[in-house]
Image (cartoon, rainbow, N blue to C red; front, side, top):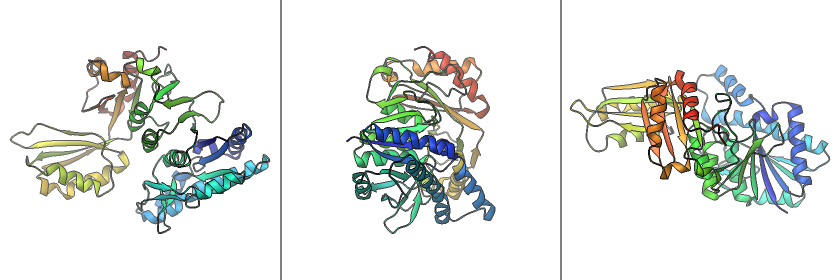
Amino acid sequence: MSLIVQKFGGTSVATPERIKHVARRVVATRGAGHHVVAVVSAPGDMTDDLIAMARQITGHPPARELDMLLATGEQVSIALLAMAIHAEGHEAISLTGGQARIRTERVHTRARILGVDRRRIDRELAAGRIVIVAGFQGITDDEEITTLGRGGSDTTAVALASALGADLCQIYTDVEGVFTADPRLVPEARKLREISYDEMLEMASSGALVVQTRAAELAKQYRVPLEVRSSFVDREGTIVAEGTMERRRVVTGVTHDRNVAKITATGLVDRPGIAHTLFRAIADRHVNVNMIIQSVPRPQGADISFTVARSDMAAAADAARGVAREIGAEEILADDQVAMVSIVGAGMISNPGVAARMFGALAREGINIELIATSEIKVSCVIRAGEVERAVRALHREFELDKA
């Protein structure tokens, strides 16, 4: 019997009626002859509500206790979904991340999964039960509850699919799949039938919110068969695979990310080890850095600019200021009024002039580019936050992504 892992996000389980709808979908999959492991997020905005509640107690809640609090959100979902499946006449059992033996490192609020002991899940499946696992959480070797960071339920689902050798991992969300751009900004954006692992990873890392970045990374690393589809309509979604269908296009999609802040260290001393000192200090604060640009050294020193998530701006700036004297920085500047727009496409590897077309499209809109970063299949630009919508629409037009 084949095994399917199905992940349902917070909007999918936001109300009792939606939980019943998810239960019927899970039961239908089981009725089609598949074993099912369902991974669910906390209902609706519960995680945000719990964070807000903690902030009312203290402005700096201890990370361990915050994880203890946030992990309760998914427990609400798994228990209610198990009840709903029982009401549909099928056996189900809910498991926390710890009960499912999802083992993580001991880094609270943003832990990484180290491994999955599948024995408990295997026993429950062998007994004929539908297994419901709390997403977003795990447990350390010394029994400490941890959470995986924003979008962590996607990572849970992909990690379980990999560990269990699942035939398919379905990410159910509030959109019908992966689009050529955010349909809320570009009404003519098209749903993609297929996208490569590399393209999905680049789109996720540059702002596409349909799959969390680490989940896309795991899916690529372990070649987990992945499908992104809607919780609310029964239509085919987007398959993430190694197909070549969409690679005929130079650019597959345009993404944007408003959760960006720019940090600049000015007037740095030009000697070996400066960048290491700066970014070691930032890494010690568990802050991920996205884009890094260093200017050509001048007599007055070099500048280094880099981007982080907006929520990490204060920590990154504090870390940089902590080593400012050591690296000879004149100023540490922090700016959260920026955003990033990117074009992604496997076809860019063999087609020259793509970046020039992107820069030209932005220039015609009068949009200034502050930072640029490239990979083999992505070009990203940091611009002013207020210019995102115009930029995305202009790039979607430039590369004719509305045409099938």
